[in-house]
Length: 348
Image (cartoon, rainbow, N blue to C red):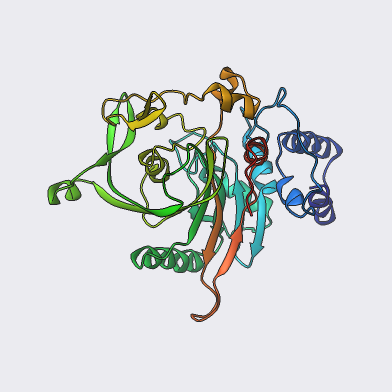
């Protein structure tokens, strides 16, 4: 990150006051975990310091609250993991919305400033592919409209051919009954308690499909299990709001930090079962005492647990039709890595 600041100084003169302000902002972002993921990723296995019980900052790597536009641009610039030609790849922090209402601070709202900060001049960045607000991980941006169009067509064709291009990592509260498989269900958006939520539809009719019900499909594979939790690889083959969260709830294994859909899983005498989606209100995810101890969290801290769903890998087409696909990778957020360490789970 200091090297980035040095490069900025090479190309233009920056006043001492602005320089100190940027150092202060970036120092705060580093304290929160930004700009450290790529460096940690390059460390030899076993060389990282092991963290003890969580202290005042139980979830390192989250965006600081009440960021200004300039601070958000600095955070996003620090989150750049790859640049090739017109393409810029970010590792988006959890909780940052891509779009929103007018006046809201979103990724889309600061793209003009981010484009200028990255030295793109008049070539403004556009969103090609992005993880959702509550998930973290890869965001693919392009400063070339033709490249944007070509890649969006590639993703559409891949979905139609049921070829996965996006791979997520998730930590689940519970272990799926099978080590891998497909999750297929129809989903619809329903307005419940003032919020649009995704609700499964058991046997959708043709009328349902015309009215917005969509058949959804995801692949899953269990990578590791420990302490009643699992590290799961998820590959969505369709696109629907909160698809992966709802799919894991249907496996009776809600994603850790899912404070929206996890209440649909009930437990009686240690046995899990699904509650009716339409009549089950969203509420803070409840973790048992043993899991809280493993995570070194109090119940009040667990209520702030971020969603452990990370867009880890994205495949892009090669320059020519027969070229090997290009692989983009985003390191796990620090709080996600901390959770894996606490639970004894390992991402190979």
